[in-house]
Length: 527
Image 1 (cartoon, helix red, strand yellow):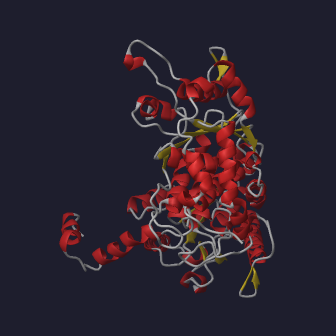
Image 2 (tube, rainbow, N blue to C red):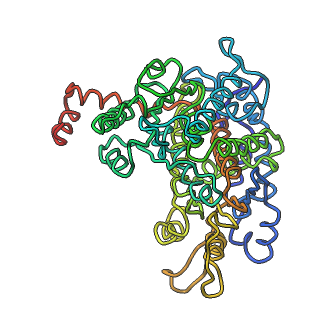
Image 3 (cartoon, rainbow, N blue to C red):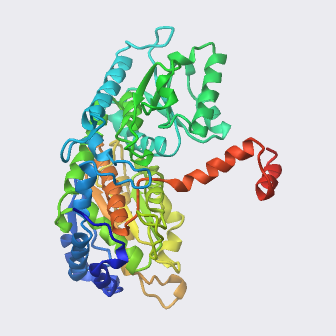
């Protein structure tokens, strides 16, 4: 039986809190000391990835203290309760089953007589069968032509994760001859978003996926109506071009307006839903079901590692523990995610939602205020673009920002050229290596404008190439990191009440039920 306690009540945390600034990262990463750390401070991940934390402000003593914290906080045991079907989402009184959607880790989870694993497998098969029929030309438009484009209409978790995964593999799929359909995404209720997508495609050969778990999401339903209007104006029957991904209890599930409906689950939050039908339908249509299966295979293998009680062999938990040390002991309020891969250009945006919507809480699981910091602010951009943008502040600003790099030895497309003795890929990899050392060690100079203090901690996840398996492992790594940090902070990482108030007030504005500042802003915007 696990116990849920606030972080500041744990004896192991009190011990860890005495170790602030124990490690001088400039000295630790300089010369042969640095070479030794790079060799030793590694944790293998799934998908051929490796988590290297040599440039973090930890040493063996701190790692031992983190292991004690993990044991006292019962992190692995709490994860075991989660995947075995405990009601971990205390705010909504729900199970948390996105791990089960990719593979069974523990015992059967039965809800209202339904084996949830069987449910997820059935929806994966349904999506695969549908995609195969579309690719084979068994499902066509009214003119008997194959569909060539698939458009996802959703917002938040119904958009960010699937979009990031699609962009990550778009070029890989083309090179490996697995690209089946072009994918587009409509999310913003700004009409320019939907209009731009519609003008860029042949709507007569497009399938549109409406994604909303509740079937009541205002932005999504507005964009659905926008698309239906465009289809009707083109002389097309919307019901022959539209699919739904929703819950079985949603109004969308019972509608005849859709060519097919696929079901997501109340026990999977939107930001964790990329491995469910939310991502499965569009990615299976875009790349083929086999490629989507490889993504969640990589995620499932990473989940296995997250069950290991040995902190040094559990990269997801280790990353989470180091992050809590940085947030709560070192006092760093932000984290930058910096993928040195253009294919991961939208991955930081997905993690921004996944982390900040999950752990942006100021009360614990029981609704009681906590008196310590919780989730950090997450942001990021791909390298090397970011180097010519906000890295100035990261290197020489007054705030220390922990960094999480991601890099790959090989590019996806295979095209490259040698310029001045090295390839573009070699230059990319040289830049990420240089940045890690520059942030850690700095540079002394008599001119303070040119002086770099160093001492800026970072980690890097390194892989051979960004593939479906490594992408799945990367996705699961960060999802599990967020989960473990929520456990440590004793907060509910699986609801998102903070997004609701604005929705309620927006409906009041549209109904002209306003007063005070709300009415004044409505007047300013001419609503």
